Image (cartoon, rainbow, N blue to C red; front, side, top):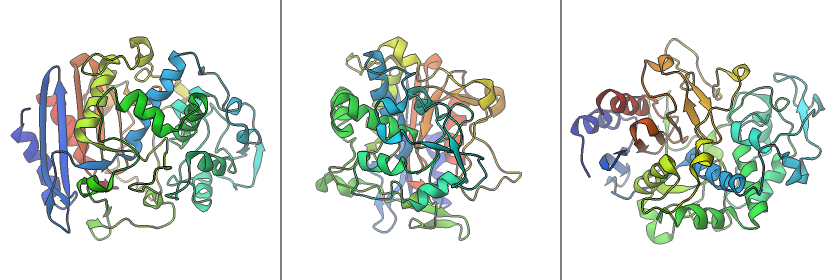
Length: 399
């Protein structure tokens, strides 16, 4: 394990300037491991970041669920062209908004039901509670995923009450589709998502601190969650305004709780093990999770030209001269962003670099061409995106 003092200093500035309580990072290049940490796990108690701090990884849950679903594809238990209604009859009455900017009650008949492929690619027509569209607002009014105690099955039945934002395969919208896919994984496996992920991913990869729950004896390691308040220019408790992602339920230890698009807790070391697996489909000790051909699907762009550029337009986003669409250079594979055009991001990165991020400013990338993977952990909703941009830039200009 090696430190990079220059990188530690670069990232520590974001903590010292009050953007983040603390940060922890790891970079793996072939057999070399570089790691560092700085700052606090909890601002109130002044507890410093632990070597094994636990984080709510939010949407970094999605690539893990994608691997579980790709295993079903590999085993020919599902196909990418299967309509979701084959597994989820509650969507048989699904309708579609007549116009994306129209009234949520103004709907039309669905032409073609979303497929498994659409769920992976976010082309199904679902939205998210925090997105600036009428369906996102409808999800918020239905209190979709706000509960700490509902099961995934119960939440998907709530989701089925809302229309799609657009006809499947006509547009791209980051969405709750991975929650739908996770529910299909449960149905096909005949088991809870918690059990499936534990048996098929966490145990083989020795991810002993990754789960939808944190035991009471380990809860002191969970980094406190904050939100960056741009009005006061400081970290605050989570703000519970309408259509804020902070309204989502994310309990510490409720055994029935599982989600497909968020909900997991993990540590830096655990997630780094998952990222390393994404090079070849194998654990560090050689256990095969996915074969190489199936694994390529997660980082191969499946989006046609009509979908570009892809973008996540959250509520309250300000598109001024400082605005950067972080997905401008990317396409989408079966579970992750994948880099298509480095020239659209200052010539940084390699074509085929892939990964994802979490709402609380966690981030990871995998670059097979350089045998490199990297993960950064912290815990701030609406955090300063320059943290992971500087992390990424450092990797591609210095390593």
